Amino acid sequence: MWKNPCEFQPERLRTSPRGVDVRGQQFEYVPFSSGRRSCPGITAGLQMMCLTLARLLQGFNLLTQRNEQMDMSEGLGLTLPKATPLEVILTPRLPYHDLISNLSKLYGI
Image (cartoon, rainbow, N blue to C red):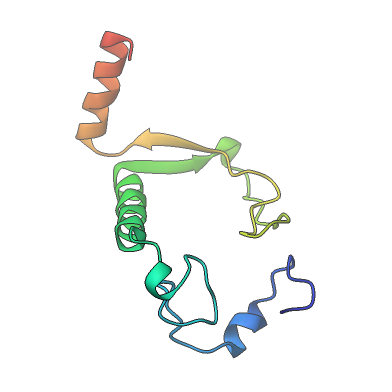
């Protein structure tokens, strides 16, 4: 379909049709299959992914080790993984997370 499919080229996305939905009603991209054979859990999966990320960002401060710059270079693969894994330190931001942290220390969970 593309030359060098493992290489990220943002101009591909700028020229492709707008409004392509991953829920399977358009056939340009078929990430979860399409039509009658589409994934029944895609809506729940997308909502859970957004909710999990929102809770993570709401409840924790994310810091890199030694306040170094993040390496944003891309690795090879279908989903364009990072070449160097992102390692962050999570520190609780909300009292609820402090409570969970203290309970886990107290009970050794």
